[in-house]
Length: 316
Image 1 (cartoon, rainbow, N blue to C red):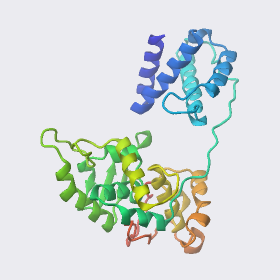
Image 2: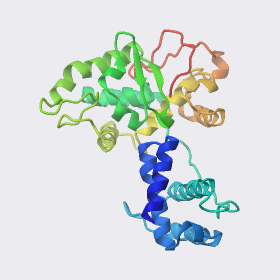
Image 3: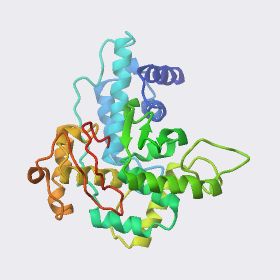
Image 4: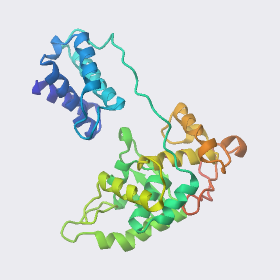
């Protein structure tokens, strides 16, 4: 069975799946094969149905409670990919999942911070590194992994541009840096990063941890949670909430739905529904009349005041 899992992993790599998916999806397959104690060619739809019921009862091995709907969905998604691969390579004649249907995971309301709450976070930031983290994840709309992987060479202060070399789905994008954002990132780079950097193990990473190496996603989470406590915001938020927030604020300021980065119109409209309750003081797209060329005028504390027109897609 190890050979099956390894071959599936190689298949995912050839298709261009991210390193994280190349690790997680084969692990899901390995757990399924361990549970059934059968070879894939012996699997029947009833085996998968029983496994789905088992997953709904299985304890979470990382924290208290059971598996989330999203995690169960990922487990079944891995199996679907496995059987498609095996059918395409003539290892099985038909996928046992072809006639099965399982509930999609439910998504609750997006966690959105208002512009005023964003300004509170910036005002409470007690280090240049924390402020740089906020700018990368809010002002620039980076995902946590993208902030972790950001290198010095990816920020062009002179041209006011930030490059994401390998975003989700291996997509590249270029982000225009407002003057305030560029200024604060440069302050961190020139004054605080050298104090953190290690002469023994130099790194090209832009964000560093206290020992001088590339910061981790968990450390960014801890910094953000600490900042939330310092600010006194009693909300269940994650670092990714900053990315959701900037998308909502851009839409509220008049950015056309199709311009909000990689989001589909349906997803962008889900953000737009948050505007009325989260951003009551900001004019929505229907009142600004701004579409392809736009001017954002947001919180100066958050560094989102943009005085130049931009005709591309805002990459959040």
